[in-house]
Image (cartoon, rainbow, N blue to C red; front, top):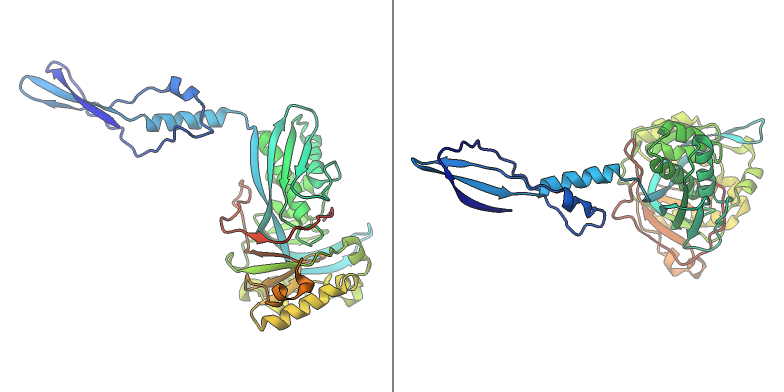
Length: 392
């Protein structure tokens, strides 16, 4: 800010005006248009001090507020061309399978919760009439078998949009893990397409449409915690039932569980008979404990992958009460330990587990009309591994 004192004739009349504010303007900001320079008009605040024969007035140059307001106007009016979004995964704190439906699917009742582990997806407008997907890992389909492409096709079908995209998927969530990584990617793609179209659809629209391409996708349009029923597509949004800062560790062996194979081995007469609403009430009142983290898919998953059962048992034995609960998420093969971010020492020391995926995480929510934000502390470490495609 600069100022100067200029003598003024006593005949002139001035009123004291103040526009001083604390604004910081970064002239090198990459998203500010050069057009602002031509539109800028310097603000002047004029004060006058009378004397018997002449007056003084002070001219103060304070362009920052005006520049920032112009920048906001241009950003608001400019069409969106690029967007980077966090695509978090989920865990099932409990998962009850209640019956088999006539259409071949199973009804479930589950407490889903978003966690801080996730992928990053970058979207850019494409001049062509075709979506192009790239990723940082091998084994992920890049055509319309991928749920991201399915979601973008669904959005165009529902809205008549003619927008196509270049998409890059930075994959951190393992597939075949029971963490809903592919479903989250699809929900994130729907959200992105809607942003590029000026939010033509409501969040409720996106949630309802998404059930057409995946049972777990509608959950991600909750605010992060939900009681899900039906095939998973009936979503009852909940306030967080546990503190968001509760730590957890995710441990996934290289082997994946086939969801279809797990359900094929499911025997309803051997599942839990505990009322899911009772489990939800206990968690809300008392927090997470081993007795409420029931997963009816554990038994069939352990038949598909016997080493997974041994892994869970060994984690419980080695933790010596360090975890509040240890359980499998979804249809596997991730084992979740709630209460500590640290895996037992044998995970590091035993050669059998040198290739497991490890990640620490916390629970995560979002604000209405905003997408999920990656926490600054979110981190994951794992050796390179292949990502087979998973529909769930």
